[in-house]
Image 1: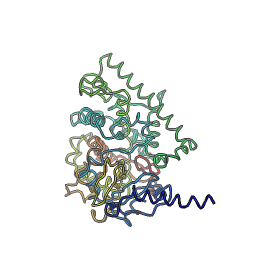
Image 2: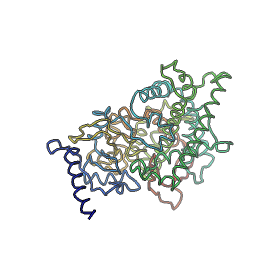
Image 3: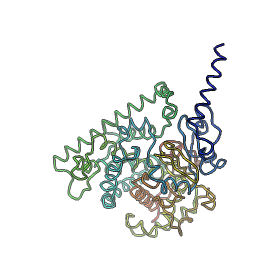
Image 4: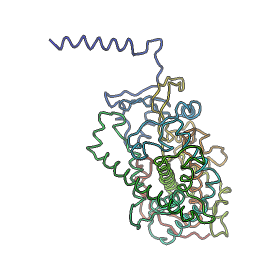
Length: 496
């Protein structure tokens, strides 16, 4: 009997909800097309292990702008230049927020960094610090000696292993970690030292930051992170990172008391941030946690994405001897008679720049970029997008769009030789670093490392695959999408 009384009650509740809370026919929103979703999880089952590929396949069916449901969160996926431009340029301010993430909140001091913090006055202040005090052109140039020294160290390391199989990922990651460590803290952290193994700790940070957290989308399932150990891992890494960063800051404070940097030595990020912490430089009081979050941004943004890009470039070169020959001819002709290629030589290496752009087109380090969130209702390609909708931009899909590129799956750097397309966020068909307010602030720094490292590798060595070994191109998902397996190669000295 009670059951029959419940049915009309539920029907009445549903009717009232539709009447008062659902838009009327005249006000009904025009939403983007959507795949069929399941109860509770929505479209989460369609993400797969490599979301940029799964979402690309869905966009082929549902169009360049589609609406998905990830648990309780609406998510739009943009896979075309027009959709990306609308988000990152036309309505950049509307899409300037970041969705909340419990993992980044715990790792980045409540998301007080440039990458993950919500849009507002605090974000504008710390972005200004990053752009005008840490990564302005003068400051980037001041670290030239650091870049050149650490890339020379990498070349020496490879030379010592000539004619044997080399783990290029290890070599490239050590080089980028050393550059960023010196730029950020004024020193390197070697594996043999006592204390925190910094390289391994940063690897854990990157893995956790790129981990999908079910609790952010289905809150009542967040208890699963206690069962699978995720909460414990995040807590431990956050604690170890904090101990490392505190030691870095205290070390720099002691160094300042003893006289600071040597004459002619570029001041590191820690030193700069300590100078402005009291607010005298910017009028903005930099809290200790924010300072540490900004240091983490420098480590995260300057390590994995850089060496991942270089590893993919070397992978493509090993697969395309024709491209290698053209690149060798350019680099070795310009480097003829020189002991080392310098950053001054890079401006004339047009084919090398094209090679790097082509690698970033096919292998953007973060293929879905960092997610955005709409701050208010907005029109997007004539569709109505509600406030608090998460936005994903599939840069990987746009890099392989046959409407934008001839033979998009072919590795052909020549496509960029007579092209004005750049990677700095002005050309939306190629946006490996994003664009607009939330674009990556370290583009210039990353590109210089990529270009100089590649030029010196090609100048000094010939590379080949180990005998009877095929290249496995399988990807591994994370904050950056890299090769699942490290790249192994044999280096022999060039005759140049």
